[in-house]
Length: 453
Image (cartoon, rainbow, N blue to C red; front, side, top):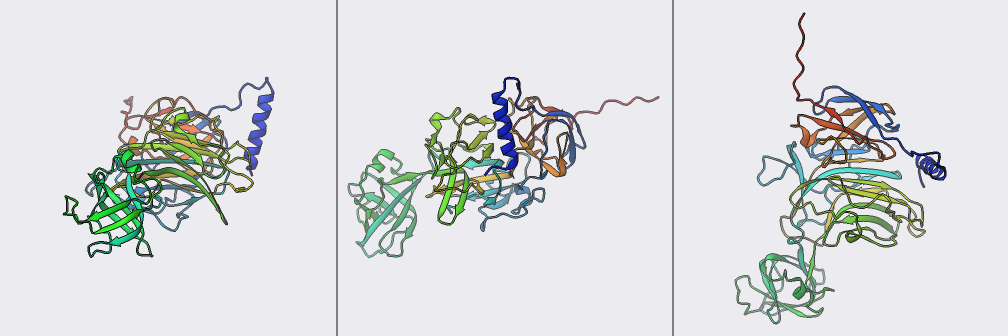
């Protein structure tokens, strides 16, 4: 299953481990010069050592909202692999739109309106994957969760045969009540799903809502019947855990679909937080076991990175690393079982974030840009002079025939660093090693005076 490159790497690591005479397994890259015009979109040449050879200099995929819906030609893929593109590209001049620093456009996706994934699917055929992206949650998942009841046995009490937005709902004892914001009727005409506001009533009381037993009656009233005196309809609760509260926000998902098998690993940042290999896991990796607890991107731009390595069938030897603003969620020693004899095929698709089962209205996710490659090689720039201090690195785009062990050519991308007087280059090679001290570039610094003879 592994590529020949990774098999060779495993052999080298095993050999080095067995021999005390080998003290260093990998040598960090060294940048000795950076030449070219240090402005957005210009070609810059980095020279140095230990970059390791990258077979395809261009990344597998690069998308930025600045370029609209379609991926950038700076990546090898020029189209999304999914059938549907989730979200709308918007300009910063439009009202109430959140745009990242240094950008003029952004993608916005409304989770209340649809349950698909933001953006679309990207297919890959490799044992390794690296994903860099910049996103923003315009919601608070601790407050904007969906409040839902699935029901059966709808009964018309007062000449109304359907639940509609705006109606009020209560339990029989009227201790719990709320306002309908959305309703879906099933084809049988007597069952369906109702969603409620988190701003009207008291359905946000999670303990009381969860305690409502399956089969309990719920009454629905006209929106002006604030005294809840004349019920128009009744239903029987058909939800497994009372009046249900959920914000099922998967921030990242690796997927493989092969006939009847749909295998996947996802990461969530909910109240528990977890990394789950849904069908092949030995156990879920809950946030309370992470080295660092990662917060949701609640109304803040975050830079997130994911680094994946496929594993062997039935072996706990696969790797998935996750950083948010360079904070690493768990150590590199954490391993996962991604495949089993029942699910033998490695992942082949990557999705960005998704919310299942609804949210409150106007729960927007924003995306600025996404970079995906089937290699761990990458070039980044940061405003901090050491990799340890770097918080929000911007990804830089390697160009055709532009990467060997001693030289890299990139199309400079600065993002939020466009206004910085100085920034620093970092190269991550194919082994995941990085130069710990950045190579400085100072495009806005004054030029030295010239000497006239």
